[in-house]
Length: 134
Image 1: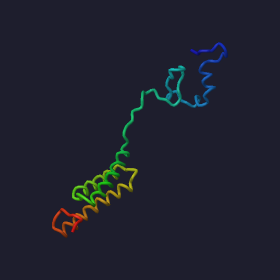
Image 2: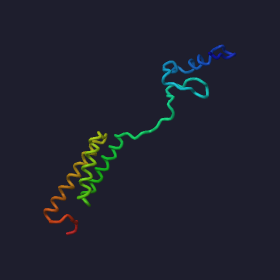
Image 3: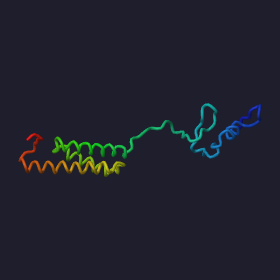
Image 4: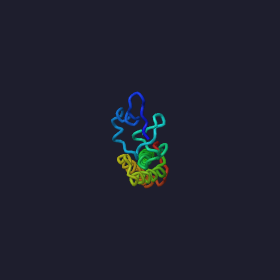
């Protein structure tokens, strides 16, 4: 069924095609009904509103940054706890192929450095605790 207008004699679909040059390139599979004009709207799918999902790369980026921060913080305090956590978080971020690969590698290096500092201080002082004051 084609609707025609009285003043021009053209169908509604014909007028829309003339006014929108991209309407011919839109496939029927990717179009939905526009409620205002009754015609298909280009570039829209009829599957309802889009649901945002978290990307694994984004979570891996957060792990890379967290490993860097914890590794850096572990050089100053609680290196027995923060060093291994930084190493594990960096390895998980690298396994999930983070876009912040350099930050994850820095976190890995700082976590290992935390453990090395801990080993040196335990060997020198014979205790796990240490302070900057003499």
